[in-house]
Length: 477
Picture (cartoon, rainbow, N blue to C red):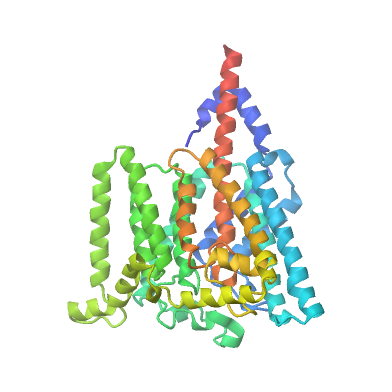
């Protein structure tokens, strides 16, 4: 990561002054940064704290409380417009337009249209999901703006890198512990109701063969994506440098994603791991890469032979217990076969049939939040987007994604971890709603915007530092 040290700032007063002005530095921003750190730390525990609220989907989590604290900090001290870089403002503008379009879609197609034209879609259920998704969209858009405005010096960058590593290590430990039964899933949600009508999917947390969920979500797809994004954020905060901490985190993350049971996430993690090794090899770390591969194979062998639940006596029975997860994850390489898509081909066919019955839905969608009431989610990000907000909404989403990807490509330092992490996560969106604000993905879309805002803020800070340094040196000459 291109940057300058504190000593250089002291040697160049003009540099320090111009950086402070350009980045909107102010003492009250320390509270904003503390709330930001709390949000990041809260990614380690995303199980609802209490069963309070009209629906299980909005039961409060640590991340929600941290966003609330961040909002209060901004109400107490609102930074100037200069605190947000132009590239952040362009992305923020696209997000605001997207929120506006979703509001119109919800009002017109989810609420008004069924009442006026007797649509078969029950607006009561759709309205609940639509309100939830709108609240999440607004919450995540504010989070992106709030993080974009917080100055990140070297000390703060180091603090965030440490927190990210700690959260990732904790989750990489909790996923195997819950997978092997050392920690009972039910014990983690003992404070929540066990009635499915009240707690929804939390009532069956860790049941029905879903093990290795850690403290992230009842949805293993969310678990896998969360682990990947935390690793990507760690790389971004450390400028993708090769060291034994990042190398060890790569191995641990691969293992944890494997045990999460998410095939899409496992495939994405393999792509990201290959990218990391390629980048590190270009930097001349071939011997270390071989060591990482050997360490990964050793860990995989230990996990394969490790007992699960009953601690069987023979190796053969142990291998038999782990056959299911091995077969499931290795089927990632045959993802094109229908039997490995867990019924998604039938879901996709049904959703396309629904769209064909009402051709206007291809353009405008059936209404924001209406997918469940019309049958089911699309289980594919583009399809689910068209299903709810139509081709117009898909176009808006593509504009947001294009602006994010373009900014990351142009501004990230060599290695571009968040850019390549986004590419890997887009692979998962072929079989799930990775970046859509559905309850199954919880805070993930917001955490992704958080990561993008951090990466671009670091790049913007570095750009200001370099420009100011050149100006200062030119003045001295």
